[in-house]
Image (tube, rainbow, N blue to C red; front, side):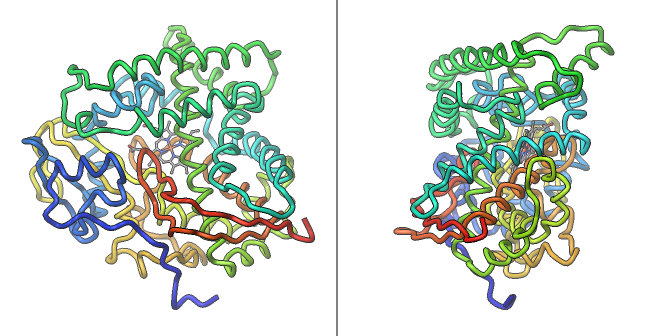
Length: 457
Ligand code: HEM
C-alpha cells in the first residue's frame, strides 16, 4: 500500500493559545479534543491557573512518564474523579486510592492474567457471531448503536455468562444516561473541594440508589446459577480472587465491594471498547484499501468460539488497525492526577494540591514522536516496530495501568475481524465526524454506514 500519503481524519478546532486554566475546564465539559492549546503538542509541561488553583498539563513523554510511573507516589487520583464517577463505580478500583486500591487491585489481578484469555475470547466470539449474523445482508447500519449494544452484550457475557437480554435495556439506558448527563465533569467538579456539594449532588445520589439496585438484581440472578468447578466468566474469577484475598486477610467480601467492582468492569470496559470499535469501522469505511487488507487477512481464519484465542496471532493487520485507532482516537483521551506534595516535574515546580490533566490524545499526535502524526496509517504498528513506551499510552502506564487492556484488545480485534469477514462497508457523512471527548471518545455527528454481506460469508 502507498505509505506516502496517509489519510487525515477531520478534527475539531483547538482553542486559542491565550486560553487559561478556567477556559480549559469549561471546554472540557463539551469536548476534550478541543480543550487544550496547541502548545501541548510540543511542550513538555504547560502551567496554567484556574481561579487561583494551579492547573498543570504534563504533555511530553517524560512528564507523563514521571506522573504516571516514576514519580507516581507524588501524584494521586483527582478527588473529583470520585465525585463524578462515584455514582456508578462506588469505591471501585477506578476511583479508589491507597491501601483500599492496592488490596482490590491485587485481588482482581488474577482474573485478568493471560490464562483467562481463552475463556473470555470464547464469550467474545459467541457474541460477535450472533451480532454479525443479525445484521441485514444489505442496508444501512447504525454502527455506533451496533458497537455499543455488542460491547454491552460482551461485557454481560464475559462477566456473567449470560446475555444482557433480561436487563440489557435498563443497563444500557442507565449507562447512557450517566455518560451523557451527570457523568460529564463540570468546572465546579474540578474546582470545589470534595466536601462541598455541587448542584448535581442530589441527582448523583438518586442515580446511585437506582444503579446499586439494578446491579444487585443482576448479581442476584447470576448467583442463582449452579456453581461450576472451573471459572466460566469474570464473575467466577472475581469471586474466586476476592475469596482468596479474604482467606489471606481473614475478612469477608461485603456485597458492596462486588457491586462496585462488577459495575467498574462493565463501565470501564464497555464504553471504551465500543467507541474504539466505532472509530475502527469509520476508518475502514473511509479507507477501502485498508478494509480489503484486513479482509484478506481474516478470510480463512477460524474465528469460532473454540478457535478464537488461537486465531489472535494470525491477526496482525487487524491488530495494527486497532492500535492505530487507539492512537488517533484513544477512548481514555485524558487522565488526571493531583499533587499530594510539593514536587518538581521535568524542572517545573508543582505545588501540593495542583491539578494535573494529561491529554493523552495529544501525546499520540506529537510531531516529535510520530511521522505524519494526524494521518491514519497502521503501517507504523506493523513489521515489529514498536513505538517508544511513553509515546503510546492508550491504556495508561504505571501502577494504575488498565487492568483490562488485554481483554479490550482481544475484544476489539476479534469483533473487527469477524465484522470484516462478514461484510464490506462504506460510509456517508453529511457532516465530517470529529471526535468528542466526554468521558470517552465518542463520534460527534452522524455517519450513515452501508453494509453488504461478502459473498463468501
Ligand atoms: C479500549 C478499551 C480500554 C481503554 C482505552 C482503557 C483505558 C484505560 C486507561 C488509560 C486507564 C488508566 C487510567 C489512569 O491512569 O488514570 C485504565 C484503567 C482502568 N481500566 Fe481500562 N481501558 C479499556 C478497557 C478496559 C476493560 C475492558 C476493563 C475491564 C473489564 C478496564 C478496566 C479498567 C480499570 C479497572 C482501570 C483502573 C485500574 C487501576 O486504577 O488500578 N478497562 N483504562
